[in-house]
Length: 373
Image (cartoon, rainbow, N blue to C red; front, side, top):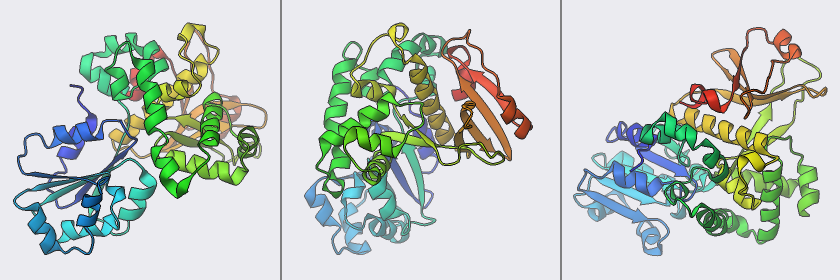
């Protein structure tokens, strides 16, 4: 059993008077985590929000009625909670009036769940985002040496739990994930009917990982207008498929101020979309793979360790560039990502002169642990 970092993080918050909210893409292991989290607790009432009778159970209900339903159970788990009408108000009712019960809600799409719980549960919740397995979690599972040996494999197939545990069948599992789960929430939202164009957009984004993207250009490629492209990208973010990095601009006139890059949370999903599982040494896009992998791992690390930082990339009109920037505690930390340990990278003089208090580091497979553990 691979131990998830969030297991301990959430266990510390149990029975502290607040709801626990767990969000994340489908198939990243939310249900497995909850089963482990409540394993030693006998009184658990589990509700599947996808089921119609579970949804109707909360219609026009009261705290007294809910207490009767829960009985002697001290933990209530509401899986796929975004399917339940006014879920935020229902969770508030439990948290405020059934104080001896710990309620845990999960959701696979942040746009539904977050919008429905944030206002009613202000000050009444701890919220966690779950990702596919991380480099750090796999190091804890079987050691740093072994996981570094598997880096080339992870760059191609990624970290979805079923992919990691299905040795030899990674392609089939990834195909099922992209065909059956990746679009489920997105296509249900606002009755999106152009699944083919959504797939084209994802493929275009997959080819442009690590590059600046233009909504107008993407629209031309996918036969969509720029506003629809932006809307789809927001939905893909809210379903935890992709995430954006905006450009950093503060001092210089020639810094790009309104640009963005888009990355995938998982390399395996990205490669599945473009049907390319070639070995790293045979690929032209190995630099893109490494950049996507290392930035997504850093996102997991920052999230799981409750760190707070602003995240950017930096580029000028003269094509000077820094792959990744973090800003916290009043300082800038600049990073370049090189798959080859022999590749050289230097901090652009323009940047160092303008932001003299910044730190700079190059991250390769050799020193990955310094960045994501």
